[in-house]
Image (cartoon, rainbow, N blue to C red; front, side, top):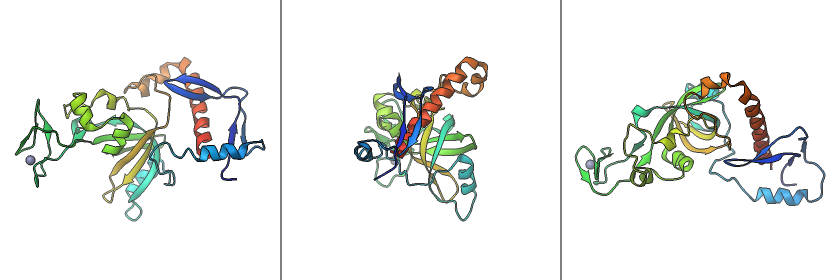
Length: 251
Ligand SMILES: [Zn+2]
């Protein structure tokens, strides 16, 4: 045996943005069942590897545990995994940065209409812009400030910061593009780096849910209580999603 198999029966495949598994009243769960071909399935799934660039050997921590680490002078540095949602994006602190392309000039660059300028130079060619977004991330245990670095946002959005600024024409440093804003409230698996000063950086991130919140804006937290009809449905979808995730983790 090369791994453990979790077999979940009688799931329905539904389509909402992408394919997902949903449990039914007949769903049963069995670990390492004895059936012909099990070994072949185990090998097939083992070869799929991790679809994202997440290091699944890292320890998983809750936000409360991350807060404890960040304030612990002995333990605080290190990389961890955390399931959390972005609940706030700090617009006023900008969402990208780039350094001047003139050698030895370390000034920050801002885009103007047709050029890119630092405090001392004007550039015709775009420098390499990087995403850098200050957020608050939240789970059931609490909330904490975290900065999303270039790789994590590039992966979540699907294109680079230069594409965002030049092709998609989002050039205002104080106005977070809608495609970034829409990441608010989505369940993410984050690789969080606690730096020696206790601040948190998100090195990589992936979406863990195929379910988009019904109201993907800041009203989400307050509106669900007034929609009793949708609660049962959401709960069912989440259960199915959790089971599907377990299936993938154990395969
Ligand atoms: Zn410069």
